[in-house]
Image (cartoon, rainbow, N blue to C red; front, side, top):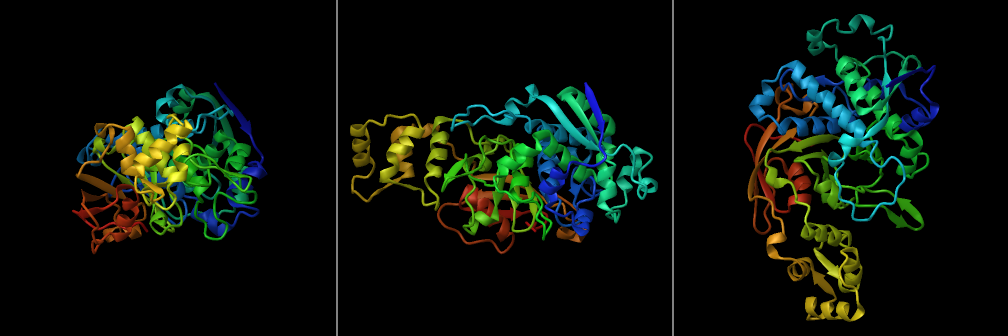
Length: 460
């Protein structure tokens, strides 16, 4: 069932949450594009200006996740517009559906590794869509009249004042995922033209709940879009990736000086890696590094791109040994791969292992016989888990990289870069090309090297 309400204005608290105290016209124009596919890579979305990659890259990641489950690369490139639209619609529904998971506060165990993909099919509404039922006066003549014209949409952003745009938005509410899907299937074109990115962003926030998003961010006064640079913040990226507007990329929530700082509480469908971890500004948790699919959003200082593969062996299995690696990573803020001896009891407790004082003391002597004060991760894992339970990625695998900025692609044509990854033994030097991507990927796979077979992509 659908409920429709005419709004004279989008709620002020939504605009403040997204834009801050003032909606700056220049930033509004940069975010005013729709979901536009490239004519050079028909399943790749185009980013026309700086900023909206915070929405475009996660949508692209979900789109690729759905496509690679069925098609190989050449088959993807031969898909017609209607088929690509079907998968875009499916991806938008998935992104909105995960916003409804755990929408009510419920007790949650600290080791929740459930993927939203396993429960999204049972999600109920309400789902809220922000829509423009009619083009704004200045865009009516530029709206496509036939599906074939969607590929020829004028990519120039509007100069129409944002007040008019917000006053014309209609809010639609759907009580079931089925009704949401049917509406989007019939009205996807409205999100592929001007303002589609913003309409979908508002829909995600309204479906999650404005107050809930603000609470999850945990930082009063912060906006989802940076007020000076116009890029999406980490809370916005996390909201799109896993349906929760956490401001941090570690696993779980942390209490820092009495403040609850929200991280990632479940294994997401698509992952997240950042060059900033290589620079030691952040540490991405196990959840974001090990999604339930073979797709990761990659972050530089200023831009988001997507990495994906068809190699199912890259999906980390959900085993007790991998769970132990996750817990050990929580106690390894500096990435040293060892555990302070004094924290062994805490690790055993997190893993539901024996924490009897005599046992802990015995294990300390076994794991640290030379009394160095530290316990090496590999020794802990070898002691408590069988070697065949430990997961290792393939030594060689293929990856593909997407960048939605035409100016960042050869000849200003968006194409998927194809690369062969090799896991090396010991320390290796960076390649002459693609070192930024290498530094980003090495935060997950350690010492790897990449040979790009068609062109060298960039994170920026």
